[in-house]
Image (tube, rainbow, N blue to C red; front, side, top):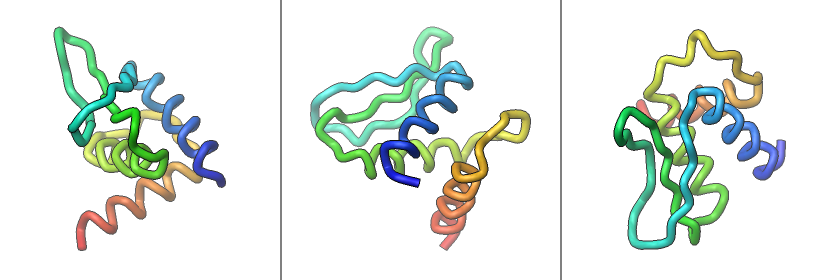
Length: 87
């Protein structure tokens, strides 16, 4: 699966989780935050798509997604991300 397709799948997954994606430009890594009972995922606009994918996978790997329907390709990427985090 191509990076653009993976990114679109991850966007859909975040949407199902009621997490709004915000794109900003600046000196920050990005990631998940909560403000006034709403979850937001901030991504640096100047970063490349592969960085956005890695950041999203890292944050999703910390969540309990057992009740969410996830595509097979995203599940595989999440398991790879979790395995690399454990090393």
